[in-house]
Image 1 (cartoon, helix red, strand yellow):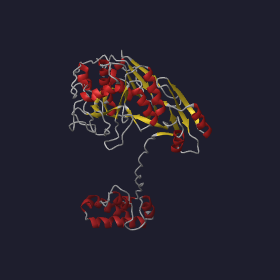
Image 2: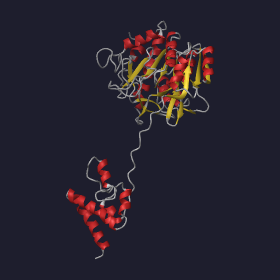
Image 3: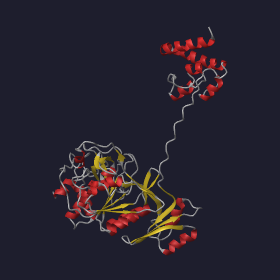
Image 4: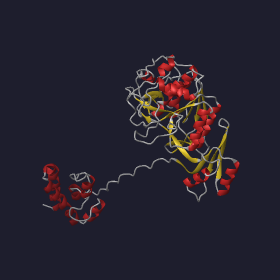
Length: 468
């Protein structure tokens, strides 16, 4: 018999009996096959392709042992018996891809100022700073500026140089802020629209329409104004952003706005359908990353202050920023505006996210319909209230509706309660309304205030029906 015939017979036998061969014998056959390949003149090339070292026991199966932590080599891997017998050459497995780098937290070469006077501005210009953009903020009686830093300074050193000036103490990086959401599967059940209000712990019946409420502002991504849920709504949208930036998508903003002013009888009814909603799209897109910088955020906040809103919904999160903190404090103390923000979805052990963690802001976490906190919600002493935010039914970006999850979608419930409370008690200041909402909350979790639920579940039903 020819050698080729014997090799073919051996291959057929091994296909049948290899699963029951003793481990030592199987290893011996695998090692011998490497020699057979070498005898045929192609063994060394095959060993190299499979990551081996060119000798007995150094075929690609040794790499499989390393990857599997010492497990039996896989017959589907490189360097196996059948590969050796029939000259099959396999490419080595691709190494695991490196994790994607985190998105940037700030613009790489910019700082932002709010109160810089002309003398201090000229000092920075003489040092090599340049003005990229500036905005008059009439609602805040200030001028904000984006400054490009000199090439010989680090970002931290540039900020320190600005803060060393008498009017530059609030200077900071041009930080980025992002929407807080997690996409969930859609729902085709005809009863899905009921989920926005029915069977949640706050107990509002499906046909309840609260109001009227005082005007509300939001800063978010784009909003699809043509969505059927906004037909007849008092919705005003202003787009910010520079021409060279790619606009944000109308996914997150549409969902948040619909929770507030979606019209009755549509697939995505909202909490306050007759209320005026002033929306600012301050976001732009870089690849898949949607973000708003501080410079755009404070411009949007100033516009809302000028529009006379009494509550601002901020379903976004990012790093601490001294310019943003200054604006937040002015809006509450000087403009008497209540700000409501999401605690963020970075996880229970994550650092605090802002603006929610600024003291004057109502920080909102998310719960599911069983009263359990959203597993990704940030926790801490700054958490004020909890609201529905897991599998909430609201508008999709183009038409219809779908489930949404994230602390972003809990914020509109507290925003609605705050707007109703302001309409019912116009004599109360913003800080007093915040105290009232915490006092009305339904205590859940540990007795008393805690770092998971804050004061508890927002009492939207009590506010809506005027209960004490």
